[in-house]
Image (cartoon, rainbow over all chains, first blue to last red; front, side, top):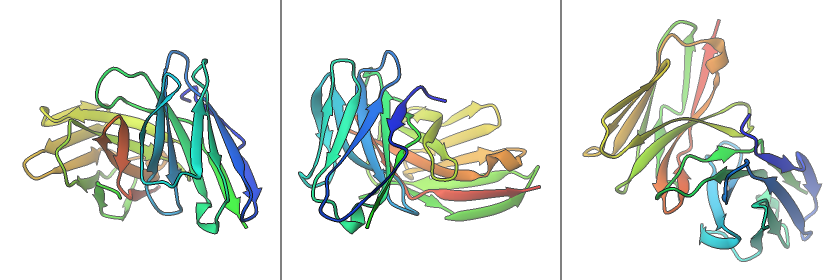
Length: 114
Length: 109
């Protein structure tokens, strides 16, 4: 167990709706990264937050947005859901010490878009 | 796009045998990490190897890195049924990780 928690565990939405996923980082960590993992694929980097600022973004459209709070927990928001958004969403926390740190992953949120 | 590519995509062995997975990547790196994922759940960090290291061990795991060939390998010795999982290599991407598609390992009793 990494100490990173995510909620909810599972979620079912319909196309066009909006969704908010939550992540609590491991104690002492100031950085949260979000990844999307489609079935049979590796995780794809969405964005990262460091001390409440977005600090890097992957190839995802603006309808994917996020927040990081003063306690370093984070939210991922997805607007105008599409069928292809169905995936496992993973958050990972870390402590910024260098270029890329070991990341500690939560159990994920399984999103199904109908 | 995914930088790392693991090979093979799937591997089936018996308990006690060794499992070897390979990873190739495209651009220069500072470090390379290996993660394990059980049944579509969260990823567990296994080992990190820096670009100036050639080999690293952790318990039953042995990782090698050849930066001239842009490749890495993960060896699991004396495998157990509990090692059944997907294994991913991840290269550093500024401040985040760039994962391959993974190798699915099945260890049968």
